[in-house]
Length: 257
Ligand code: 2AM
Ligand code: CA
Ligand code: CA
Ligand code: CA
Image 1 (cartoon, rainbow, N blue to C red):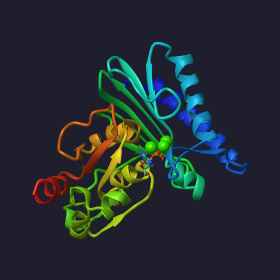
Image 2: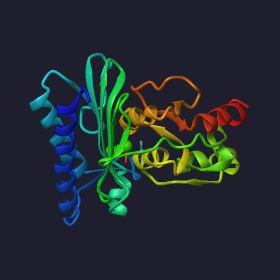
Image 3: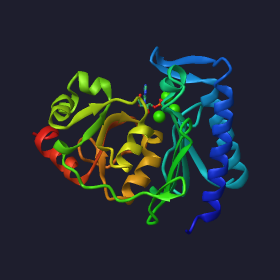
Image 4: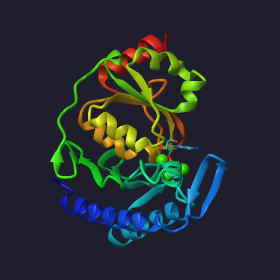
């Protein structure tokens, strides 16, 4: 591993952040709305982000940070080493279910993903990997999932896209074994890594996909914005990731039909 020290540090920070989140779930959350009543942020999202930013600033003071909350949500470029953080991915689940949310951290070098971490806090499962070194669930290396076709598997989807049939999401769902809606991009990307789902279609910001892309890239999965162009990393856009077979089928038969 080329980034062994950094990997050990990030794992420690994630454990500490997750312990903090679990302890605080027994206290009353301070919940506020961002763009609307279903777009929430809590004091724990902000405190977790602050904790991680402080650690990065202490250990890697020259690095730059892109993170969802509070003044860190834009960068003019991905030049140099950039950390991309979603302190709680699945905030609605965090508030309503107290499960199915993740902490996500990615490290990019000049726009190329180097390290990815998706931590399912309540299951205590860390999915992580380094470019060219494979993907792990905690300490266990994950096997390469099968290149399954659309008709052979479940697909994760954004509920709004399915309901409005945006980019033929409804038809894609019907051609699959069925759709699943988890409310957490991290959980959806984990399902692809484990071979439980064949793909995921949603509308995402860079911190929603940065860590997951490092990991699905290790298995040679296909991903892009829904038009088939590279993801921009500077805005929210329609997102697709899938097995190579299912990706091609969705693009050719449904999205660009
Ligand atoms: P978040 O919880 O970190 O905001 C399902 O809603 C998934 O889409 C979650 O991973 C969520 O991440 C993400 N998402 C991105 N933008 C969103 C928005 N404006 N409202 C709700 N969820 C959003
Ligand atoms: Ca959010
Ligand atoms: Ca998110
Ligand atoms: Ca978030």
